[in-house]
Figure 1 (cartoon, helix red, strand yellow):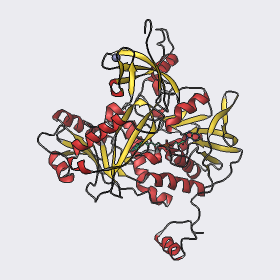
Figure 2 (figure 1 turned 180 degrees about the vertical axis):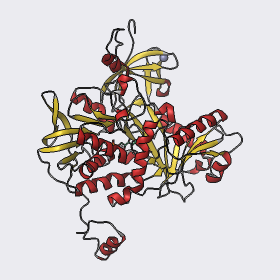
Figure 3 (figure 1 turned 30 degrees about the vertical axis):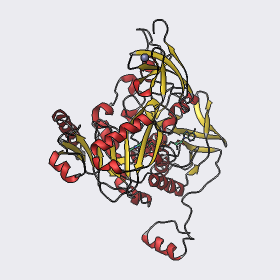
Figure 4 (figure 1 turned 90 degrees about the vertical axis):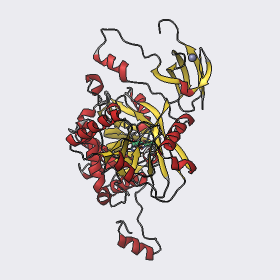
Length: 85
Length: 417
Ligand SMILES: Cc1cc2nc3c(=O)[nH]c(=O)nc-3n(C[C@H](O)[C@H](O)[C@H](O)COP(=O)(O)OP(=O)(O)OC[C@H]3O[C@@H](n4cnc5c(N)ncnc54)[C@H](O)[C@@H]3O)c2cc1C
Ligand SMILES: [Zn+2]
């Protein structure tokens, strides 16, 4: 069992967390073209190695940013999301 | 040299000290130009090469594999073969595959050990029983045989299941497809490789594709660890590595790579003669010819390229197994492993030309592309030979994500494998 560190609750078992998708996948405006809307909804970086992802801690319902290696599973940082996110 | 496999040739070579067998496939050095280059020597890639040569008469074909043939998901999968899908488009695809599997051993002159022992999907509540009837009806309307079994019928066929009155997931019945079953995964890869090789396909292992040669906005070849190779058309069939390949080609895909794990128990005497899945526990199981119970379940919930499973998911799968089969409590596990599977938002595969012209994709099979190897190879060969879709592959084009015509089989037919 791997521990992920929620920025609000501290280290918790991985089963308490839910993967939310790529970080920096910003929602385009209402006038977005079909192509950019499709890209936002469905297309992913899916990086091998270092990745920036949004996760949710299901226990406290807070979304946060996790920097993690998708091969070794080493977590290098977990950060609260700033501002409007 | 003996090339054809038969009872007679086994006898002859037996008397001859097994010295006369021809190599199953060559290890050629690569030419610098091909009509078609296929990246990935899993089942899908090798089948594509075979049908390109056999059906379309394409002469110069290369398959480039960075590891060994079938060493990706093909050699790690639990080999459930079935066509019990919900949408007509999926049925066309997966039932074509099952029909091709039924004659594949003969066609390839290679024993793929196809065993059509049926597949049972347990139903655990009256409400689900209604959904099961709907699923069975959908299959029958789509022209695929299916039965709705009663609790008594399930009990007669699988006496070792948990029928206790206080079972957490009681048995109300099951969806049953009699033509479903299992086959030997390595044999499917090796059979296609040997047949493709004998039609002149160059198969190169231990060679990694590291980038694409792009001229005037078109893919005209690949850079490999053994040099550049040019091709009229390039096909990528790299499963869990689809995102990595796409990044090198300059685009993204609607694919996330997850680990899917499986495990086998120590071998025991024959006790279980079908493939069984419970959507409630998420666990599925069959017994191999060696006697091991082959056990699988859902995806690890953490996206990964690690090719190894995590413990929470293994625990979920095994506790599901013990809930379903209390008799297996004493079984010891022999091996556990994981593969990196290419998961799409609608659990359906992707076929067609990629955003980089000249580069074509066959991927997104996720947890269920072994059963689809013969059909996937047939359709992708058509695409690579003609540059356009086959009617059965068209609904699976990448543009479905833009038009909204998703084929959500996770919602339609439940568990995928
Ligand atoms: C544990 C597990 C259980 C499964 N159970 C089932 C099941 O019961 N039924 C079912 O139908 N399906 C099942 N699947 C899914 C099935 O295994 C896959 O969908 C199927 O094997 C995909 O075949 P493929 O040829 O596309 O991929 P693979 O067999 O993964 O082949 C892709 C190949 O591409 C190669 N490659 C990658 N990058 C490069 C590069 N840069 N250069 C050269 N080569 C490269 C890889 O080395 C690999 O050999 C399961 C998968 C797993 C992991
Ligand atoms: Zn928290």
